[in-house]
Length: 448
Image (cartoon, rainbow, N blue to C red):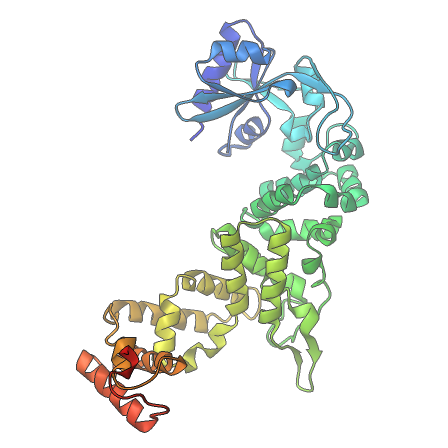
């Protein structure tokens, strides 16, 4: 894992070779805030060729833009030459790069709180953009003209929201207005880059605030119109005193505990089917089969955002089954055991808890399900089935769905403790065949 000590040693080596060099960007911001840094970037007067000559192992990831990765024992460190940039013609990359000094390099960066430099040897901060004042004021402010900053790289609009939510900061009014005016242009950013920012938001320290900021800036409608459609959709007050579907979603995502990306996205999308299934029934507002519709929407959204297939399958299964808990107390023991044994169950249970926390806050069913799952885990059934398809075929039942039905019934009996031995399982098969023989082959006929 990258460390400040390794980054400082890279800075020292470049300085010893005569190049002005500093730690730069987010790691400086996090240091001043007393937060652990996710990574450490270095800014230097050394050109890429001079950097590679000083370190035994490097990777040139953007030499034309002055960027080299130095490989250390504990990770890779991005070392970038001080530079200023020409116009951005594609909404992401500068048309030209000119190597410069630290002041010009700071002025090209996105936000003031990310435009700071730190000299580890002197324990000194260089601030050309007012970043320290904005850190003290807890403000996310674009450097220079915010509209220009966002035109250069439109993903910066999402980054502003993510940083504000992550740090508990506000977005400076001029920066906020520029995001609001240019929100629709986020659609031109690649799906993968948008996906990665959204993941960081919904798995971050304050996803509820991130969603509120996405809504308020207009970015939600541009990036996740399926979630924006929840705004203003009413819910039955006796079950959802929190308000509309969007407010419920916002609170549910915020209630999660250290979720995986798949669980966080599933929670974000778990009620995406409600706007399309809203029905004013005589007794109350209903959303019949919104879980099924939501699973289809979740799959479409995640495919659009280029999520890995395993995450899509995991999240859509959670959305499609998130209403299963209302039926849990009435389930047969065998069906409950199958649910508890399902690898999906821990995430289903956590989604259910967040769902309850974001609405009526009655966790009695959650606590009962958790206790039942623990009880079942303490008394697991035998690992191996007590009978096989060959046993059913040997009793004259022809190959087909009937064999599966009989074996499922035997497995149910085993899980529920009604049969314990192979002999008891075979006796149950005999009784089922006798009660409903259907088309029966001569004994052993299924093997011919």
